Length: 514
Ligand code: XMP
Image: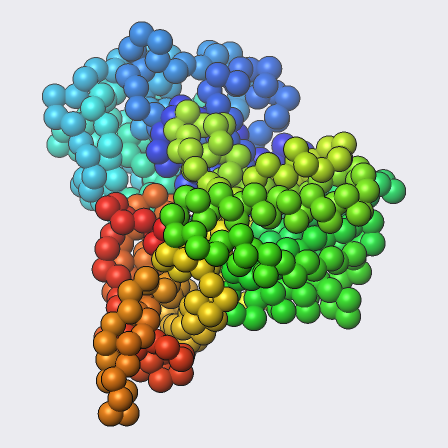
């Protein structure tokens, strides 16, 4: 596969992960690197068939603005510049950049003047997504302008002889009509990449690599039952079998039947040959959480107790050579690779490495996006219900029960949530909602059931649509589906007499309740 890849040079744009996604959707491997980690020697070493310069927030001519080693333009490798990347390309190659008299933001009608290059699939007037305050006022020598708008003389330009293409708009976002096709044309037609990035070949290579790396060493994995750690478990099980030990801590705060499902897949008699240790720690967690109502304190207790349990188990296992983790590509990008870094304050099962005696960490999924991880899971034979699982917070139901956590409340929220999930699936809505769950409010209300007065719990239903979980909107679930969920919950779950639907967006709300 040597050479059959695209290098994405990150100048701090908001949509850089999307560019990498679009390239991989063409079946071509891509990697994002920070602009100041890239020079001609690095490019030669990475040996890509094409390079994409991303957008970014600065002015290409500004003092201290991110720039690029001019040597890269002399390597004979095709380059696509997007937004800031387009301006930088123009600037470095002798064109002119200026502050635009009229900035363009959002949906913009672009007149396409040259449709035989990467814009071949464009409409004559193509709707594109713009976000810029500078523009290219004069293209460099050798370039032809292939698109313009009323306010932007160079919305796209190209120098086919050198394989340089530039677009002021963002082809990577869905709002740009045919945008994915423009990227596909650059990657496949201009760069001549073969679409060979497939999960079956990835699985094969990753299994081989893990086998070689681990040798006859021992590997420990904290298996949460979520998609990422489950796929790591399946991959390593295929690679090294019984040299892998998975520790699964059931903290009693998982969704209904989830602990049993994980145990049936990975435990003895399941489809994988590995060491599986399930720790039933529910009572321990409930004891620690008794009387605690403050959300941050609950999170802290759950996180600490998790580490304690894991520490105790790993002491029994003794020292291991490797600690495996389900880190995925967005985690790596978000924790500081890109200048656009959005730092998640995630309170996962962090800190584990401090407590376990091991030599090195292995992260077989570190170059994969979430949907690629799911695809890989399918490839490795994991059941669809596990592979398509929605995000679930590390502290589990502990933060979906408002106020004190008790075993009884866990039972209520598990049952209500299972009904909600079943009805959403029956209505065919599961694929179109980003995350949905039932929570238990800390409110009791008066109701009437079968002529009797009740004074019982209120359940809240949450469902959001989001692409990045940084902002979100409440999902527009049809009324009849909500009514069916409500009826079933009050009828089937003891001690619930009221159901609310949460309409709050994020911000001001959050996806979770606590
Ligand atoms: P919030 O509530 O912050 O949630 O809007 C955004 C996304 O993050 C998930 N989330 C967590 N995930 N540990 C996790 O692994 C946590 O402590 C945690 N808190 C929130 C949440 O489910 C949503 O997908």
